[in-house]
Image (cartoon, rainbow, N blue to C red; front, side, top):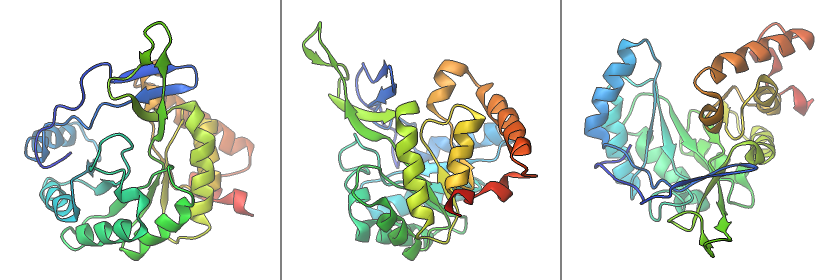
Length: 256
């Protein structure tokens, strides 16, 4: 969510590829003021909500986050790393000082946990996680989509209207798992793993790399909302087979 409603980019904004999904939707959203109604509906259904915010500068991030925090969200994710919305994320995630300062500016105005979402489009993502931790981050989200592109040969042109977008889905998972592993070697706050989670085995890769939780996105497109139940059931069986009694026992075991 941003400070004002945003339409995003014209179609086509999503392209399915054999390795996952490319998207350049352009951060379409109704704006943080209208978002209050969505939060109320989700709360009425018993949901726990982590709101995600973006802006053009640290002050705008803070203003959106402060407004959102009054809606009863459990935490706020800072989208510092969108790879296709110029001036609204991608440049921030490539500057350690900016990651630290944006995080600190938001932390100063909210009393809920703040989770910066980092980019895989950098040489050493762990250094950016350290910067976020120095800024007061309560957790790290890794990773956002990977900057990528597809071309339609029949049309002799890029498949997305924006030309390039963000790669998500199975192809991103090894990159995300490596990023989480590297980050957990350097920071002392929880990490949420993201990228290509579509099964219990996928989720456990992230957890054993050090993640305390995972996000699921692209898998919903092909598998539907039931994918969450499928993932948790498979995780339970795999954990039992491996001799673990709970998810926390498995967090970070690959580092041993």
